[in-house]
Amino acid sequence: MTSHSFRINISDDEKRTAEEITYHYNVEKELADKLRNARKDERQSLYISLYDELYRRVLNHPQLTRKADEHQQRQVVGRQIQFLKKFLTADATFMEIGAGDCSLSCEVCQQVKKVYAIDVSKTITQNSEFPPNFNLVISDGCSIPVPEESVTVAYSNQLTEHLHPDDAKEQLGNVYKALAPGGVYVCVTPSRFNGPHDISKYFDKTATGFHLKEYTVTEMVGLLSECGFSKVQMFMGVRNHFVSFPIFPIQLIERVLDNIHDELARWMASVIPLRILLGVSVVGTK
Image (cartoon, rainbow, N blue to C red; front, side):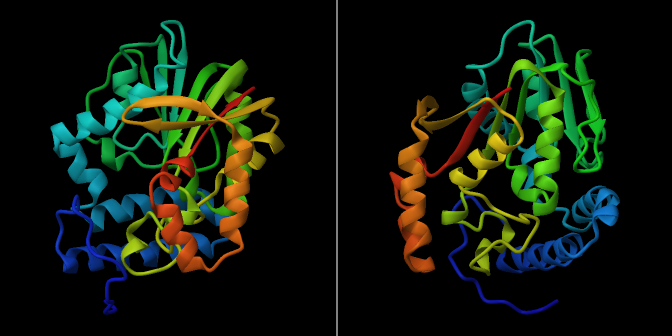
């Protein structure tokens, strides 16, 4: 493995050693480079195989250890439920894209009629038990294999950045097809301006792990509009309270950050309140 020096201090919530983080980084970067450089026809199988390989080789990956930590898992799921309850109803069909260990989807099962959990890997959900109204669906990374116009609320959290940039719009179009008229897609993805947000945050200035592209609010609003969503809103949350916020001021701030030095822009975007304002939580309505 290649030797690296850390770009920033290890975060307080990181329980692994520097050596373990470096190992994770090298494995993830190796696998992510395969995905970045692959042809489209190759990527359809690689999304599945490479994530399965990552979880096999990095046994202390946060996605796996968080599943074993019930308290941390409840906190993570609870914050997401606080946001989603604005959109959920008892007769809703909910779809989570990039469901991971499916803990959120299982929780939502208690509040809605039907749940689809879409992911590229079965590895992380092995030995799990699911509610009767839960459906695990394995995707190739772009497809959304559920009946068209069957979903009332679609949701992804930390998913879009894992897609190859050439696949993001196609997947978003497939989400649009899955939504019923008037349905909503709630999309949460980390801001490029205060990234990177994958394991490469310790080593690189831009994401080089499985975050193949980190986005801005402006970019996500543009993608949603291009795919046909009739209305796009932005939400911002503080202490589990979420409110709709005008998009235009955020686009102006992003334009300024795009035109100043990268290090200064990253520092500014990481300081509250800009960190909160630049959080990419957008909702598209079909």
